[in-house]
Amino acid sequence: MRIVFIAPFGMVPKGTAQVRALPLAQALCRRGHQVKLVLPPFHTPAVCGQQWNVGGVEIENIRLSRFPTLGYGISAWRLVRRALAWRPQVIHCFKPKGYSGLALWLLWWWWQPGKRPVRLVLDSDDWEGRGGWNELEPYPGWQKRLFARQEQWGLTHADAVTVASRGLETIVWSLGVRPERVIYMPNGAAVNRPVQADAGSQPIVLLYTRFFEFDVRRVVSVFHQVRQRVPEARLRVVGKGLCGEETQLLACSAAAGLQDSVEYLGWVPQEELPIHFAAARCALVPLNDTLVNRTRCSVKLADLLASGVPVVAEAVGQNQEYIETQRSGLLVPTGDDAAMTEACVRLLTDPHLRATLAAGAQERMETHLGWDRLAECAESAYQIR
Image 1 (cartoon, rainbow, N blue to C red):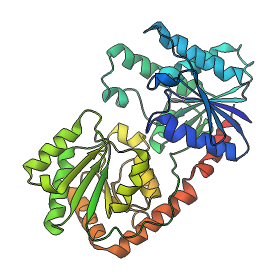
Image 2 (image 1 turned 90 degrees about the vertical axis):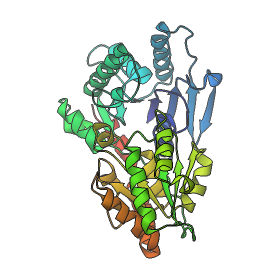
Image 3 (image 1 turned 135 degrees about the horizontal axis):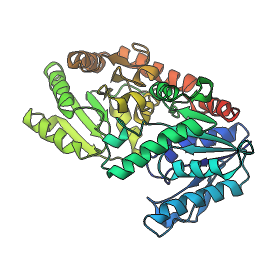
Image 4 (image 1 turned 45 degrees about the vertical axis):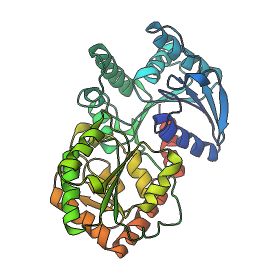
């Protein structure tokens, strides 16, 4: 089968194209399909017009229009033209908003009703509209309305929809889309064997995050309680805040007298992450119970589990799908700081439990959440009309 993926932006670290579309495309290639990834590289304009091959996947970066407003439509049209030039049987658009959302709209209207020879599939990995990312990003009002409209239109007009979370699955059903057209396809990760060895004498707690998912004051409070029971514990923070939340974390840590035990590293290149994963005795994954958190599918959590890092996570959204408590991680009720503290202390002080959860996490990721397994979900979406 010839399949084209249309991504909303170019190959940027931790972007949808990098962590979802590309590994899925590579897995489909391993299953005998031909896959091309067409991108609008507005984050990396230097690669406009360039093409290359990664793991059997053809990648093409379109040339972006120089016009500020009209150029949005022109670039989407170029995505459509390059996708159709490859003569695919399936076009899979990733994210229902922005360039890929407009490309889906153009493709839908291209043919007469009932005459379309290409299956149109839409992928959703976040809730974008009211209560979702529209509330987190500083978009102007007109853009929020556009994204919300694109999202609902795309989800209800595609031949099939792949969703990254059970929360999204429920929302798409609520829009009137038949359940058989909605395919659950969470994020996967490549398992890094062997299972992580014990991290040595220094009890490091890892916070690998973008910060918007929780109140940073709660994390400081939990770590303060952990330090009272494990005085040598250190908190290592990897990641950059969506809106500069790391500044608040450091300020709260200093106010609690924890500045000497909190290490903030900021954004870390992908190739350096295994060093910090291996150093951690456990990782905290706090999540407020919000619509954004219920519908998103954390790539960071998948990376931690695949790397054998023992995880303490709050029981919200996809955390409950990824973690079998006591087998592949520890789940605690959301907002229960005492339970998160207790679970963290257990992991810091119990090497047998750490080893059990590390092995269980990697086994679950390899068996149920590897991209070769998830590619079967995509294949089922490609058969639906």
